[in-house]
Length: 75
Image (cartoon, rainbow, N blue to C red; front, top):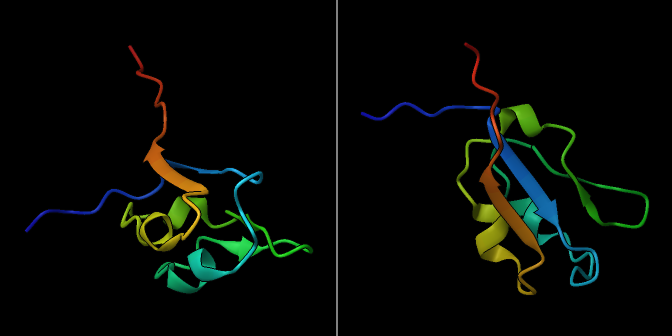
């Protein structure tokens, strides 16, 4: 069984495309996303992201993207 690495992902929300429908926050199984005062998604729980990409897959406007964050390599 593969293990899930948490906290190494980046979530980009393209506000110009987003209509604040709330689907991404509703589909997130780890409660990573929360709506701001205007309903646009924020990621205060980013450390809990497991890269399931349910937010990205269910966005009807392709306004959210989950990717691997740049991680510094220590010598």
